[in-house]
Image (tube, rainbow, N blue to C red; front, side, top):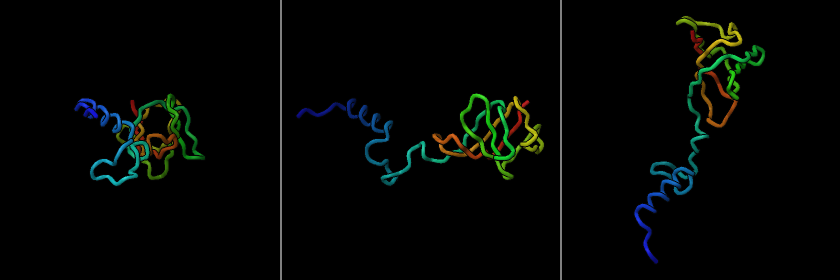
Amino acid sequence: MPRPSARAVAALGGLLALTGAGPARAGEPAGSPTASEIERNAEITGRVRKIDPATHTLFLRDSMKTFRFSDDTKAMKGGQKFSILQLNEGDQVRVTFSGTLDNDDVKMTRLEVLP
């Protein structure tokens, strides 16, 4: 049986890495979480579509995510502390949140109102 070329082996290894198939990477136990399952901090900028004080949720235009806030969420406007409940529809904001990449319901950790 002919041996595969080094290029073919490298291509197959890259394909397996992209799909998450194959053996665990060095130092990672089998069954490690995929990238979409790992909780991450991320940031998004957008305009406020709606804020719901009853459910402590914020919705941005052009985003399918539901941003949940609490008393621990830091909110700033012009370098000063700010109440999220004072936001208006159309305000430009930068939201820092934690959650998994495939979860549309995430925890907002910080909000900054932009000029």
